[in-house]
Image: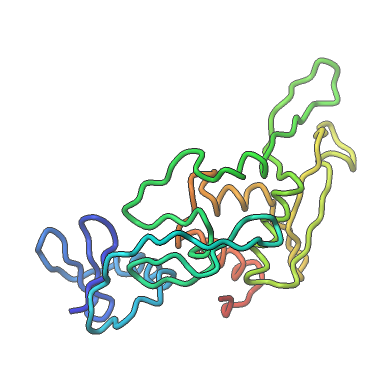
Length: 220
């Protein structure tokens, strides 16, 4: 058996398709589909057929400046699965078993702000809409360009083309070569878990969204 820990109580063997929980083993069944997706993103854990994952070390991270201004790790954060994807080089990478923390991503409040969308009718209603700042848009673009290097940025003002509603700040989008536009604020919220931290699942969700939008299955 080559078990890999999924959470504090469940281990999964992708070779035998078996779950071990509280000392009891059983076939994984449909749960294997979700576990396999997690393992795909938490690859490459070494010696799958033989060794068990060890405890990660916690050395001081050596950071380098990314184009968006975020200090990235020069080497991926040590983790039990030896995962080396983009999230592992993020200074806010959080491993399973370590709780995400509200406000952990210090830059997040500078990346996302609130636009005020108002009705054109006098004394009409207003509502709030999250939008990416210029710095946030650059970070969203950096994340996408890990998989789609030709992506670019675009900013538009909601309602500027006409209609009963208009925003007081522009919305930024990451534009793919296909013409698909991804809202930068929504992308940051998903990847950074609303500012609580980054996990290996952040890469999986972003990569699968880009696969669906581009039609390419060989991203990353």
